[in-house]
Length: 477
Ligand code: ADP
Image (cartoon, rainbow, N blue to C red):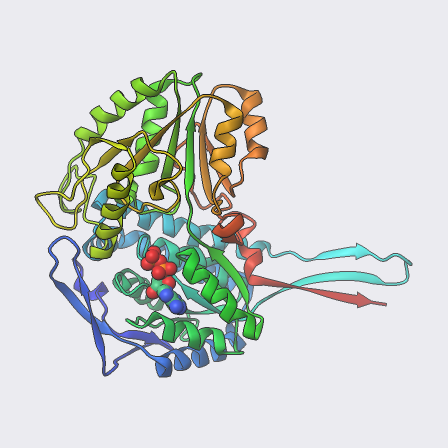
């Protein structure tokens, strides 16, 4: 690991800031300490907000070309350091190194994309009703943005939010997840090397998330919150943000249905299920959570999935060919154990796996459950582990109803060869994103986000920057 990228202090106003308190960051595989990191409180949060507020006065007045150039310099450094960043990511988060490399590239793509979008923040000139005036529309950065991110994509979730914020002319205060601050701090170090001015990016790691959350939401200097995490915490932050009428982008939990109709290429569908379910050992908000399979092909798909799942290798993310690695912490393991046990109690059958690995206490074996039904918690909650829940269905109308019977609405997947059905389901399925005959859908050029309790706002694509811009109307006579 490149030690010069392993930072352990908070990053405020371009300085590495030491705090009295520190907290541990452990490797989920070795379960040993990687490093102790500065534990920020209200004081540091307020310093970071102040720094971001001051930097906003100048950063918001830079030209789009200057901001674009800085973002591109940051992108270049991330790509130059991709292997080291990936190793840091795997060490603190656990995911297979190949996936970590994929995440660094995926995150970097947002930075390049928004460097380009910075140049296209166009306004409008609209004719007025009486012809005597002109209606001009200009766009301005919203101000200081508070960014709170989860541990499952510790680099990409930051890149996906910071890039559009900076492109728009905003400055940011980031609170990374306590489990994974090192990827975030390494990104801050590279932003410094890229010449992004002091105070534009500030980063306050903490073991007390709510203290920083309150400092961010209670400050009238912070004009927007961008959060990715659980629906429960999203609701808390939305209610806190109401106090100062801060704008919010919320990317919250999912409960993705994955529907396989009987007209598909079965091997293709099996590949899609595997890709969507087992990436990051099942710890993504767009993972297939409920897999509905048409009853006529159910048995064949169960058999093919069984062969694939039985051959998956578990172990350290740094080993070759490993696909299932430790879950983030003991709470993650406890949740999966509870969901599988209660499903079994209600009649689900374990076809493969079903236990914590006997090699490692934080690895859950890749698992297939059949005969899952709707009265089971596993069909209602986000599993966040490598467990496939399979549910047979017999007709389109009922499966759409079942797919929509959740408060979540982030991703959904449909495998079918029928173009009329694709058109119908495009409209009927209640989710922000649908993968038709595709299990991996997220990329920088597409609008990522949810409906219902999965949140609001979009990240990536030409739409992503609008969350960081205010529209101003000028009536000119
Ligand atoms: P997860 O279950 O994936 O950890 P959380 O919603 O708990 O999801 O965490 C996502 C992010 O929200 C993390 O950075 C976490 O520290 C932060 N967080 C948790 N609780 C709060 C809170 N009350 N205020 C602000 N941030 C919080």
